[in-house]
Length: 249
Ligand SMILES: O=C(CO)COP(=O)(O)O
Image 1 (cartoon, rainbow, N blue to C red):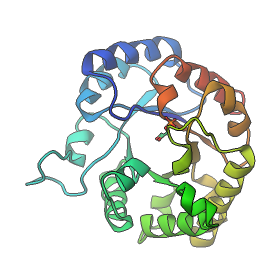
Image 2 (cartoon, protein in one colour):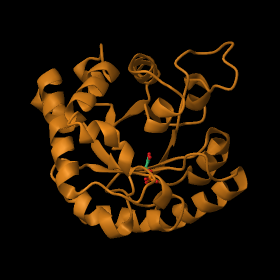
Image 3 (tube, protein in one colour):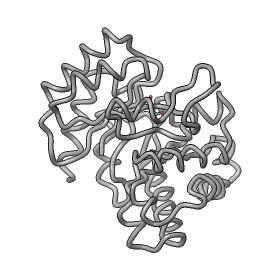
Image 4 (cartoon, protein in one colour):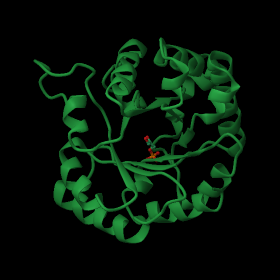
């Protein structure tokens, strides 16, 4: 799976143009899941441009409640109406800039699954936590609490994205050893919680400063099932990343 998180970039006009480029270059790809996560306001336009392609559309954030007095928020009923398939939950920017707790993230994961969509639960340690040797503790807490109360059947519909906070938007990518160590740990934790068969079927993505120059060394790793790309998903490099991932399907 190659996913592009556009974050707070691209106006509806820019989004339409770029989605058109993706449609023409990689829209017929069938060997892997390609998903883009545009800003919510761009989604109707992007869905329309991509409707006859194999590129899926996800939303970067939702509120867990169905509707009501939550000024500025977007509900699952709204995004479902637009054929959105995936929802990013617990991205480090939501955790650290907007103060989202593991409990709130868990509420969102459950709401996304109940709506019949797939959550992409993002987890990852800060540099300080890594330097203190707390990486595994942080990942374990974020996964245990993020997936709290889910059944195996729900967990296989969930994607996990390992995004070390120190690698996001910094140009400092995790080494293949660091990525594999963390992601093998996530897989074994999922095995402990839900059984190895379930754990093998959960897709685990790496995210953080992915570029065409470093992606091959990451996507070839045993426990890396794909990438969640920020900056490099905003331009043609996203197409190159899809081509690189194809070598390992
Ligand atoms: O946060 C990310 C994807 O969700 C990664 O962002 P960058 O690829 O820009 O580091």
